[in-house]
Amino acid sequence: MIERDRGGRIFAHLLLILGVLIVAFPIYYTFIASTQTIQTILRPPLPLTPGGEFAENYGQALFGGVGRIGGVDVGTLLFNTSVMALGIALGKIAISLLSAFAIVFFRFPFRMFFFWMIFVTLMLPVEVRILPTYKVMVDLGLIDTYAGLILPLVASATATLLFRQFFMTIPPELVEAARIDGAGPMKFFRDILIPLSRTNIAALFVILFIYGWTQYLWPLLVTNDNRMNTIVIALKKMVSFADADTPWNLVMVTAILAIVPPVLVVVLMQRWFVRGLVESEK
Amino acid sequence: MAAIELSEVRKVYAGGVEAVKGVSLTIPDGAFCVLVGPSGCGKSTLLRMVAGLESISGGTVRIGGRVVNDLEPASRDIAMVFQNYALYPHMTVRQNLEYGLKNRRTPKEEIARRVEEAARILEIGQYLDRRPGQLSGGQRQRVAMGRAIVREPAAFLFDEPLSNLDAKLRVTMRAEIRRLQRRLKTTSLYVTHDQLEAMTLADQLVVLNAGRIEQAGSPMAIYEKPASLFVATFIGSPAMNLVPLDGPGASPLATLAGPGKAKQTLGIRPEHMRLLEGGAGVRADEIVLDLSVSGVEVVGAESYVTGRLANSGPEIAVRVPGYSHLEPGASVKAAAPLGAFHRFDAESGRRLELA
Ligand SMILES: Nc1ncnc2c1ncn2[C@@H]1O[C@H](COP(=O)(O)OP(=O)(O)O)[C@@H](O)[C@H]1O
Ligand SMILES: [Mg+2]
Image (cartoon, rainbow over all chains, first blue to last red; front, side):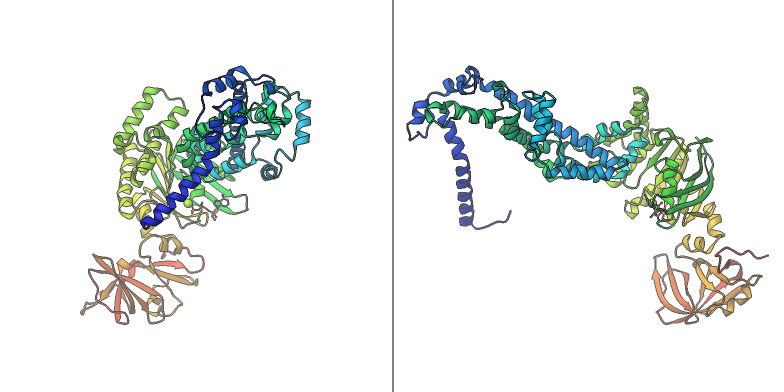
C-alpha cells in the first residue's frame, strides 16, 4: 500500500464508508421493515429503528406459512432452494471435473471435437434453449421435481474450461510418477488431481452456489406446485399488484431470509475462496 | 536385481520423428549405466521406453529376462527419478514414499519398515511430516530418491536428476547417488547431457548421438580411445583438439598420417601437450607446433592456453600447470608426443587404428 498524506487517507476512508452505507442501507431498511407490523409498513414514513414484531413475523413466515403462496412456509422454500443450489453447485463441479479430466489426460477419437462442443455451449445459456429443455423435462416427467430444477443447469462449459486450464498446468511428470507408482486413471483422479484442485473447487463452489440460489427463470417454468417453489420465485409470487393484498412484513422477512444462506457460504468459505482465485498452487 | 537388455529398440513419434534408431545394449545386473549425449539425441526417449512411459516402435526391451514391451510402467518393477522431482505436492514426504507401496497393497508393517530404512539411508527422517513445498531442492531430490528406494525395484531409472540443482549440490548429490547405488547394487540407467557427470558416475558409459549409440564401454576406455570424432569432442573438457590433415598448418603432422588414401583428421587432448617455454627441450618422440596465442583461460590449479595453428589453422588448447602470463598475440611452440595423437577418418568420423 502506498503511504499517502493524512488528509488523503481520511478522504479515501470517508468515500469507502459512504459506499458501504449506500450498499448496506437498503438491506438494513429491509430488516427494519421485517420487524414491523404490516400497518406500520403501509403508513410511511417507516421508522429507522427495529420494531417489536421480530419474533411474531419470523415465526409466522418460517412455520406458519404465507397465504398468497398457498400457505407454504419459508422453511420449505429455504429447503427447496438449498437442495437446488447445492445440487447445481456440486453437480456442475463433479461433471466439469470429470470432463476436464477426460479432455486433458486422455487421447480419444474426436477429442477436440468434444472440446469445441463444450466450448460452443457457452453460447447457449438456459434462456436460449429454454423451450426444448422444457419439452424434454415434460417428456421425462420431471416437472415439479428436484431433478427437474437441477439437471438442466448442471452442465457447465465455464467450469470445465476453468478446470481444463488448471489441469494443463500440472506437470506431466506428476502423471508419470503416479503411473509408475501404480495409480490407475481414477486413482490418480481421486488421490492427486482432486486434492490439488481443492482451492479451485472451493472458489467455484461459492460462485456456483450463488448462481444456483438466484436462479429465477428456470424454476419459474419448471415448478407449478407451490410446495416446490424456490425462495426467489415465492418472493415474486407474494407480491401482488395491490398493496393491501401483499403481506409486506412477511415479504421483508422472506427477503432477509433469502440473503442469509449465500452470505453464510461466502463468509464461511472466504479464506478458501480468495486463495482459489489468487494463488495457483502447484 | 536384474539385467536390462535392449535389442534393436526404435522409436518413431507420431509426427514422424525417428528419435531412437535401433539401439542394442545390455546393462549387466547391478551395473550403473549412464546414457550421455547432446540435447535432443533421444536419451529421454530411450529411458522412457524402458520405463514404459513411451510406447516402443520396434525391437524388444527385457528387464530381468522378461520382455516388458507391453507392460504398464507399474508392472515393470522399475522406479524412476525425474529432473523436476515430480513429488506429489499435497502429500507429506512420508505419504509420498508410501503411495506406491499402498497402491500395490504392501502390508502396513512392511511399508513402515521400508520408509524407515529409506529415511535413515537418505537422512530425511526429520522431514517425513513436511510437504515437498517446504523443502529445499536438494532435500526434494533425496525424497524423490527415497520414493524410488522404498519400492525395492529391479532397476532405477534417472532422467537428468541433478540438472535443477546448483553446481555445488550437484557434486555432492552425484557422489551420494554413486554411493547409494554401490550399496544397494540395483541396476541403474542414468541419463544426462553432462559428460563430467557421466564420466564420474558410470560403470558403463553409453554415448548417444542422433538416436544411435556412438560408443559404449567403461568411461576411461571411451576417454582414451574415442571411437569417433563425435565422441572425441563430446567427452572431455575442454574438448579434444582436432587438426584436419589437409588443412592449413598441418604440415608438421603429415608424418602421422595413417595408411590409406582417406582424408584424415588428427586429435590430441590439451593435457597431452605442453608449451615450450624458457628453453625447454624437445624429446625425440615429440612433434612441435607453432601457435599464435588467441586466449588464456585460468581455471585455478591450471590454465588453458588457446592458439591458432600457423596463424590460419584450427584453434588448439594446451593445458599449462599454474597461472599462465601469456598475452594474446604472442607466439609459442607446443610439443606433443606422437603416441598421444588420435586418428580419424575425416569423412565417416570413425577412428582409424594404426596397422
Ligand atoms: N512427444 C514427442 N513427440 C514428438 N517428438 C518428440 C517427442 N518427445 C521428443 N521428441 C523428439 O525426439 C527427439 C529426442 O528427444 P529426447 O529423447 O527428449 O532427447 P534428449 O532427452 O536426449 O534431450 C527430439 O528431436 C525431440 O524433438
Ligand atoms: Mg531429456
